Length: 469
Figure 1: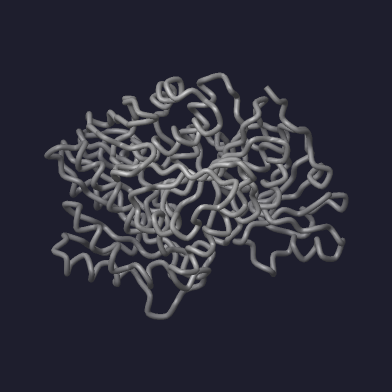
Figure 2: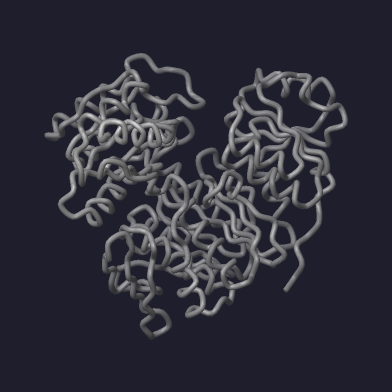
C-alpha cells in the first residue's frame, strides 16, 4: 500500500476564511492531521468548529483582520467569500497568497489515487458510500465529503491508504482543478443559475472535468439520466479513457436488474462482467441504490474486488441530512433531507413514500437561494404536491442578495396549482408548534432544504413530546 504524501509547503500554516463550511472544514481537518498549523474563522460557533479545535486548529468566531496571523503561508477561500471580507483585505496588505479551496484540495490528492465524485445530485451520498465501504475493507482511504457521516467533523479523514475519495463540486467550476484516476458523473442538470446560463454550459463544464481524468483512467457515468447520457456522447471515445456506464438501461456496462425496497433499505442486483451480484443498500430509495452501484463501479475500476466491495457497501447507513432520522415523539418520526433542487425533492419524497406505506408525509421546506427559486420555484412547488401537507419557509439566502419579486410565494402558488395542501410560514420559530399541531401518530415529518431548516427537527420533536404529555 502506497503511504499518503506529506504536507505541501504552501499549506504549512494555512488560514481558512469560513473554516466551518462543509468543504472548507474537511480540507482543514486533513491538513491538521498531516501536521499543518491550521487557523481560520467562521461566522458562528458550531460543532464543526469544536471538532477542528480538537484537531489542534485555531478557530476564531467572527471575521476580523486581526484573526489573520502575519506568518500565515496562505489564505484559503471558497467562492462564497466576498471581496470585502476583512481577513481577505488583510491578506492583500501582507502579500499572503490567496488559494481557492479547490486548489488546496487538489494539492492534497497529489501522489494518491483520486476518485472524484461529481453530479448535480447525490455527490455527498456516493462519496460517503465509497469512504465507508473502502474503510470497512481496511483500505483506509483519505476522503473529503460535503457532509458529516455522523459526528461533527466526520466529513474528512487523512488515511494511510493510496486512495483519496473527494466530492467534486461543479457549482463554481472548481472541479476542473482535479486530476482523478476515476471520475464519477451521477447526473447533469441545470442548477447554480448564478454561474451557468444554460444546459449547454453545464455540459461544457462537465466535459472539461472529464478531460482532467489521467491517462488510462476511468469515467463512471449514468446510462439512464438524460444529462449524463448527453455528456457521454460529447466525451466520445477519448484515447486513454475507459468509460463505464451504469444503470437500468439495456446497454449499461454495470446493469441494474432489480431494486427491491425492504422498508428503509433496498436489495440491489446488478449484472457485472456477465454475472449477477446482489447486495443491500441500507438507505431507502432507487436513487440511493443507483448511487451505490456507481460507487461499486468506481471501486472495481481501481481494482477492488467486486464481491468484497458490494458486501462492504451494505455497511453504509447514511450521512447527516440525507434522509436522516432525527428521532420519534408522540408516534411521529422526524426525518431530515438536504434536498433543495426539484429532482432531489421528488426523489427523497418518493423514497420516503415507498418506505412509509400509508403514513402521511408532512414537509417543512425551506427554499435555498433566490436564483434557484427564480428559475426552479414552479418545479419545487410541483414536487411538494407529493406530500400530504407542506409548510414553506422564507428563502434561505446563503451567499446571495435578495432579488426583487422572488419570494417563497412562487413555490406556494405552483404547489397550490398542482393541488397541494401548502401554507406559508414566515416565522421559523413558530414552525415547531404549527407542525406539532398538524401531526398525528403514524405521520412522518420531513424537514427539507440546504439551509438552517435542519435545526428545526429537534425542536419539532420537543414540541411533539410536550403535546403528548
